[in-house]
Image (cartoon, rainbow, N blue to C red):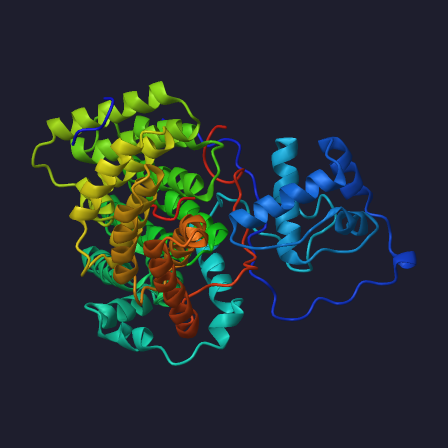
Length: 515
């Protein structure tokens, strides 16, 4: 693969509310004359040195990161200081904005905007198994759209999955005092593999609740069970971490970035109980998610921590994935020299790679070459090397089978088209984007929706000038969006799970993220 130009410690773990919107209406506030002034919020804003207008802008920016469109202005903040309580979603964005401004955690309780429900537990729980069960149950029970979801073919097919029946029975036996062994571990792995294949084929919104249900019932029960030996215990926690990782991946693909982050953090803790290299791999996805959300804080630290734990302990080709993460993180900070060093290191590792089999937790993400070239393309694009990025994206797209991986094939083509357009090659870009639209038909993915929106944004100027190719492609993209809306594939704004740059292990978007 040729690129152009050729003992981790958890610190600074902060918390932000990631709760889903309540289904019950928020009680009206009392008349302004009867409300107590929110002195705590006033004090925090004063400490930040931000004007109400500046803080409102930061709140809107945090909301945008989470796929929400809020209209918060200075007047709204003035009302909050006078005692009005913001909606739970907006309160999450407010606390996150203040946390970033102050460089420390600011909780909803501290600034007097907490809801009546308990606040989200710490990002890294003392009991990750119990915390994961609580998170998953809240995810399923508090999502209004789940309660009104129509008959689901994918849910109907869940009992037909290999090992599904045995897995359910074993979960009951463990709760009744059974022992967890190799059969239970393999059952979880088999179910995870089936869910993973369906995710690649259909998108993150399909069977997401089924994944969470299995995770928080059977799998957490296994983790609480008895084990014949430490090997079995580590095996089960590793299998649980893989499924929690998939739950995070599906939430991310569905546009629920804050919720995805929470699942990733639990996957990290579970992986720690299995192996340090597995935990390092989850650190890597935390960095990737942040970069694709448009957040640069802590990404280099996370990537370096992950690499330090994996270096020399995983096959060379797998280690190259960690180097690519570091390259992207440096590129995102506009640091070309360390980014190019990491790219060169990744290339050397690929050249040194033998025939060692990748760890299971790494192989679930798809072919290594496809992922390496995808991340290499992102890093080079961030550095402004569009020619190099185009070469890498083209190679990555060629590696993905559009029959089994239509989503990532389409998203990679969307990125390829973007760099082609950036180089002034509009005809090639339109041809690439047209193929991408064909590939993502029927995929239920917020990232696919974002990619189509980006395509139309690129085309806007050409369409206004009457360029025929752009006009025809824009009409095709518009038809895709209309069909997606009819099928319920497009996600509206207002998700209430905040993505926190100050949450998770560490020191210190583009839509086509690859695992």
